Image (cartoon, rainbow over all chains, first blue to last red):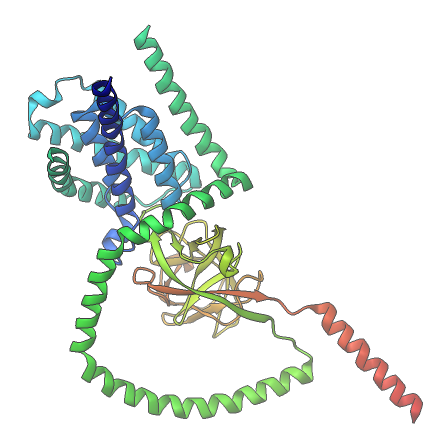
Length: 166
Length: 287
């Protein structure tokens, strides 16, 4: 009886960890860094978090958690409600669409898929935002945002790897 | 069956996101209140996570200040001498201005500083330019209040919670501010475009503008008081399109002031006038 209770507790803690790490990445995205480059084109850190957990522990990050995280990000960032949820859910489904053999293919393959995903994600977010404000928004900042996200990917993955191994 | 259920769940969350996205365009009171409650809840968390960054920034500022203290001291001495001279001139002008306004019965609006606040978070997005400050309804902040600093206009309050508020920056694509050219006095609308260089809406044809022309708030619209610095013309392009560089560096903000501006009440002016007319009638009848 006690053993099953302990297992339940461990399982619920495991569920909380992906949620909290992505929430932490969202908060890191909104800090006032006072760098012009960051202020215009903050990397999609939350997407890196969603990618990491969807690839390595897909059962620990249900779609409902992604929906809630997306709403929180939209509220803290001041972007239209539902925008990030929609994009993150699409991104997660894209990852699942690649099949279950992610872990067997190694870091470089994962990185390549991530690059493909971030390019689509960036331009989709630009397209939806342009539609939302009914204006043709500048795309250079989005390209920069995509490049910065690619640059940040190995660092965030390394940190998440170190954090989850403990 | 399991696969069908899974697809149903995915479709549900995608449709829910799209419905939220469409309904958030209408900016309903309910959505604004939910947003305010949630960002109000996260303000202490963001402040806590920000401690290491803020400590590092303070330390680097301190080191930079120490390094330039002698040069700054020299510059400030010279500036102080200039400012003393300007103060005498401006005091005389202020007295003249006040006298002329009272002769013409011009009433200034009522300007109140509500609070000084620290910036807690920044949207850091290429599409939406806003920030959160650590003052809300508890400090007297209301939706529509103007946000400024010593350099000029920053934006206006668009959403308020108990302990925090969201500021729409003047470079956001949804921002429109009534401004005027100092040299010509022509009123125009400054429109945000998500960049540091802003544009002008409703620019009169054949109006001459040169690089360096100063732009101030016009006071129309009732949110911003008149004559606050907004920016300078940085470029005049073909077909009369101009670019305005904001007077405030929106990327290096730490503290801001929330102000409330109330346009002069015309009924008061009218009642003053009728009172004076009555007095003069009484004086006339006494004579």
